[in-house]
Length: 96
Image (tube, rainbow, N blue to C red; front, side):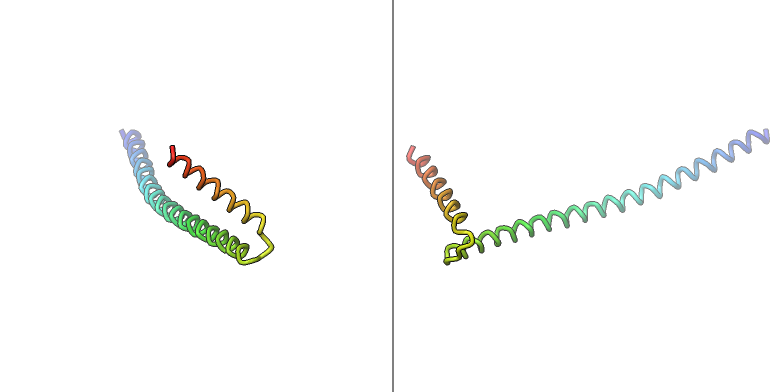
């Protein structure tokens, strides 16, 4: 009987250690999930900021061209032509 009791005690001890390790891993997993969510929200914010800065850059580039800068005249003319085609397309859609 003593041998069985020893085996049962050892088994209970191992189960206790496994359950404790499981709890530790659950806590660690929760912390990692929270850190991941924070990182993802920061990434989204940075993406929005990047998009805003790109729009500002493109607007400034176009404004410089319109003001007489020679650097991007061709690109601005193409952009204006594209806008005119889009407006013409909208007008034709409204006329139909």
